[in-house]
Length: 345
Ligand SMILES: Cc1cc2nc3c(=O)[nH]c(=O)nc-3n(C[C@H](O)[C@H](O)[C@H](O)COP(=O)(O)OP(=O)(O)OC[C@H]3O[C@@H](n4cnc5c(N)ncnc54)[C@H](O)[C@@H]3O)c2cc1C
Image (cartoon, rainbow, N blue to C red; front, side, top):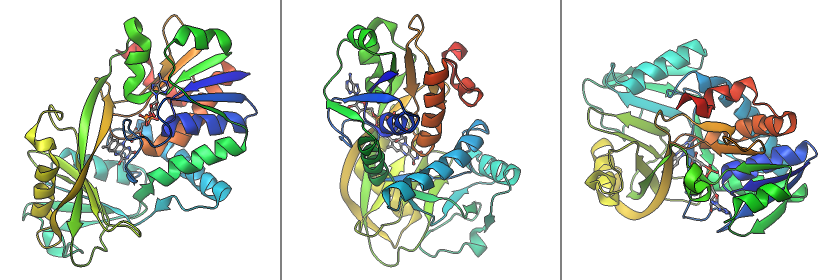
């Protein structure tokens, strides 16, 4: 079977890897090259967590993804996961705390929790009415290294990679047995009149300078007004990465500016964050319900669309890729992906 993949982000290369392992012939088209800064998969680090507070539907995918990330680590003799833990902080009735607690309990995850009085890291300044939950098996993915490893694995298995923009979908459709669109924020540019319910938002990442000990876990902090997340410095990277999640009108909002995010991080880490060192832009591709799309494009039996962003898709990539490979070979969508059908819109 000859399969074309449009898009060389974490999804395109993950799907290529799983299809090549299944013995298929794969050509991947990427317009700007792997890890380009105009797309969504760059930025060094991503949160890796099993407390999938976006919904139970992701728990099974996460378990499967963990196994496959480890498989890739072995395959490429590299390290992709840093299990430094992930701490969720908020008021007891915040969605972050309620959902993390519920998923952690239902999945029997190793966690610790408490209030400000017994918070283990002196770098954080919690409010008196805030509580915390630490997910011990969570942490971060070295996401740039993940994409590099996926690409190398696929190339070693015979991937044909073309650094080329696909402008004519019909032409690709006529030349291949199956086509996968994993084009991130450019999906609707490619689909034109057949566009899908996707909204692209620009997200600013603040890289903050820090002083003092930085041996704390990855964190997510929800307040009445916003939700920030971040990563401690890692070896070879002395800065702390901080982002604001799901800000209203992020492209134009003051809240989405690097210095504003750094100031916000300073309120949580008053003696650690010393300022904004640099900022970057990344893009969410959101669906109306913030869940993914993996489905055949209406009226195109050969074309499968894979849009797994809305700000939380990276960690599941190899698991979803495995199911996509099954869909392409069997012609039907596996149960694990049925929740991401286009029919729900
Ligand atoms: C700021 C930010 C923070 C995030 N944090 C997390 C996190 O902590 N944990 C987590 O799990 N997820 C997180 N995510 C989500 C995750 O990064 C995305 O789900 C993932 O990167 C999406 O990858 P993709 O392969 O679908 O898209 P992309 O990485 O955007 O790749 C699509 C590629 O397709 C190419 N392309 C498009 N059109 C064409 C064409 N016509 N011809 C050729 N090539 C084309 C583009 O150039 C691009 O390289 C975050 C995302 C952002 C933006």
